[in-house]
Image 1 (cartoon, one colour):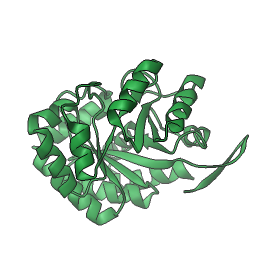
Image 2: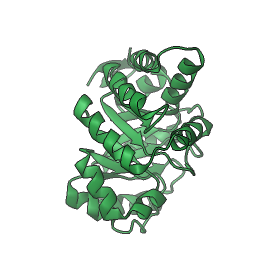
Image 3: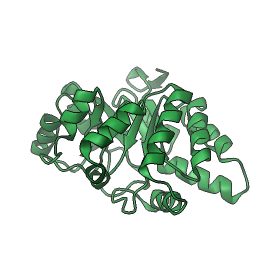
Image 4: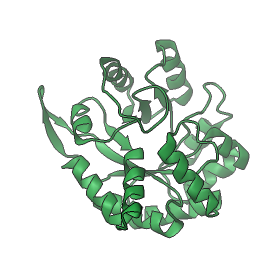
Length: 260
């Protein structure tokens, strides 16, 4: 893990989890984008299965999901892509899907497909507390992480409920602000307190929702174990396409700048 300095001394810089959309801008290019993100310094990947109703996502990711679906991307294609990414990059890959997608496929089948693809775990941002329908247990049985998502607005009791339901949770995704992905996030004292609370419970944290700058990542040094950037990379891809540039080169450079 790279080092960075802070006012309190030298702290480990968080790992970068890069978020990409399966099939965006197309299936073949999304594989090359995954490779480019890792070349640029990403140590973890989050592969989102496109949904027609991505409730937690902002306009950029919604548009990317729509484009992938319009081009015929289906879950089977997404799992095959995940397998190829894992084989090519050799970094931990987490499959992100909404609860309705998981339930529709069937929990056992979804978990089995994730495991066969070589995924490290599953992230379901809208998984109801106490109503996971056995997803946590199925993941544990298959050796996968089922990463709970805790929003900054969660009261202490809800944090405890989520952590209890997910036990044992190796990683916890912390949404650093309320609302949808993509907007600029200010790192508040409440966000830092939530991260510290979760880490004291023995889990490692992934901080997300609006990470888009080197400065944000540096501020999280010593407070979060990883950060996830998604909309930042989706916008980078869209801009590259608009300007006739190679999206793979654009995301590699963007990742390098976040970590420089």
